[in-house]
Image 1 (cartoon, one colour):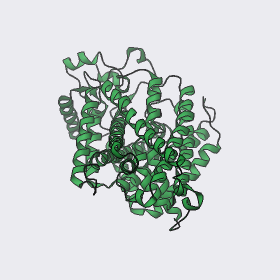
Image 2 (spheres, rainbow, N blue to C red; image 1 turned 180 degrees about the vertical axis):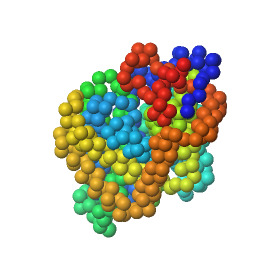
Image 3 (tube, rainbow, N blue to C red; image 1 turned 90 degrees about the horizontal axis):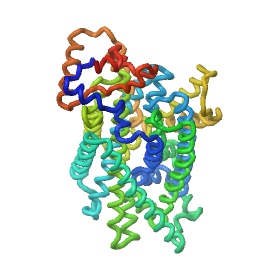
Image 4 (cartoon, rainbow, N blue to C red; image 1 turned 135 degrees about the vertical axis):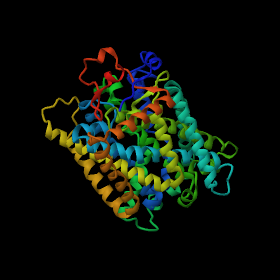
Length: 509
């Protein structure tokens, strides 16, 4: 249900951009560069412990990191084809909706809004608080309440920043990327110095592949899930495909540069960890990079928690930006309340979508533990990746004559799906509760879809309630619907609010 904006709001709406993603910058190449660096995130400061724990040895852990990069590369190539064949922003959600229809797209959106993005934000926020507090509580684990309170404070601060200005949010992302790269660069350089000085006993083949216990196939699958959390972000560029200049050229270029670079950096980082830390030390550490710095940097060890804190702070900001835009895209298609498709009349920021993401993350902060949360989000992530890439094969069969500027070899999606099926099957066998809960939460979206989206002839009292709630939300957040650029009025890609059957043009009249 749409609520007509007030006269004052309408005047301000005339100067708005069509989309909040375009309010900060309209340069597609700059967006591509930013999304490329988003792949290198805080996961490398969290996942090494989980990968080592499940793989059982240093050597297998390094193999998992290398293969994780290869799998991400296969998936990225498939997404490049989808990105230019279905040139819509919104990533997985847009592709699955286009190929399989509204229900499948809604289920993917539902799981992303309820699990994937809030859980990822919660993990990164907890990492931020752990690295900030670890030097203070050097002899013990930081208190539960202290980590949660600091995580929530950081999340609320960055939500306010993203609500206030798109330009400020992108500037923060650019600035704090420096902290991310500085931390990783410092770890790699110090680790290489250690190796050149002869400290590489744990990396020799006879030691690296020695097993105290032989890991099961299920445990190896869980190790891949932990590593995949660090690689998550390889599909972010597809969320802003409409804004990328020459996607046929820039999407593959971003893949060929970023995925090998990230895999190389992550592998070197883990080699650096093992050059100075025994597997037992790494598994017992609550903040791996801090322990690494304390062992090798002496009085300069304070640099490490500061650098990681900067990295995770920027990571929270980046995920807030992307997750709110997914909510915005879902609301534009009528799959979420229309209030989430509104933006601030002056700042052009999707305030309702940002507040929903923040609230969901705070709830998960209160109920989850870091490594279990990673298993949750990685399982759902892989599930959505597999469904999307299966859609690529189905779309080729359904529309074989459709023009595809990029068309990957058939073996690429087939190999990815074979690995995907094995990984999810063994993960479900090893962690039936964690993975099962994720599936149940996803399937709860089925009745929600039929009641909220598919059911068109609702009683008038429900429509009145929705209209009233939307009106109150508009007044509280000072938001209105974005205005379509005049040049796009006759464009067939004009979106329609499918839940109400009205176009965005009528909303602004």
